[in-house]
Image (cartoon, rainbow, N blue to C red; front, side):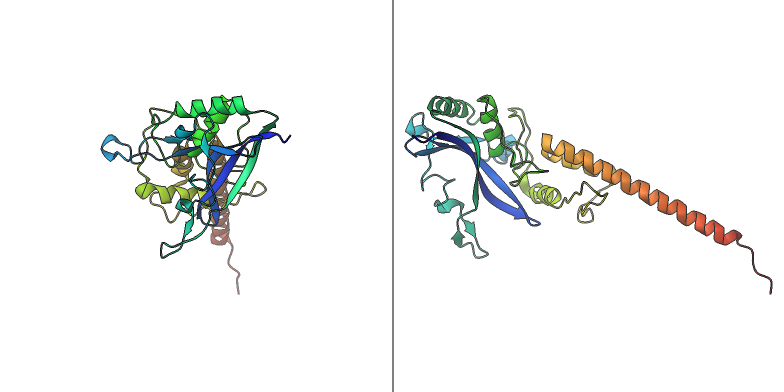
Length: 272
């Protein structure tokens, strides 16, 4: 008899500056090989209420009892569901979105654990304001796993992960004030995706020239506030270190130039 599994599914939803980012969902496989999911989605937009993307909507197969949302071609996270296929420049569907899996737990019987997770997920439906970067499907997936006393995924880490998933690791907050995704969404995603950090050098490939009012003082704070994630607190700290090193180097170069200039001014003239 094969073990049952609970996994995190990663569905590729976009790329910025050659960095891919993902939507996460939870996938359960029972003894019979049947699969079910828990997944978070945007809700009904209510801009007049400060909810540009509505409340976080939980899809967990309300019509299928306690099993969850059946994972077949009618499931929006299924690879054969064309609602989530890639589109070309002519808005024509041409290919399924890439998907990956991360095993969370494997055991002979996880049915009771999964039932509890489904019920917990349903209790969170239409309560939490959806924010494209802070509180979203990835936040829901991690919260459900955390509250089930299961390990949280590791492949979504901003530093060392393979599948960047904004909003991961956060705690669901019913009082969150979400930001309007336009025009901020692309700017923030660009900022995060363009970060290229080296742990062995003081070099960073952050293009601050394309953003208004970027300064070494406010850049790290922006990145941290933009995501409010445990992952990115380390990122903001690293950026601050890099900016400090950059400023120190500039000061040293300026001091050296001043010394050389002063030496030139006091150099005695030759008599000929």
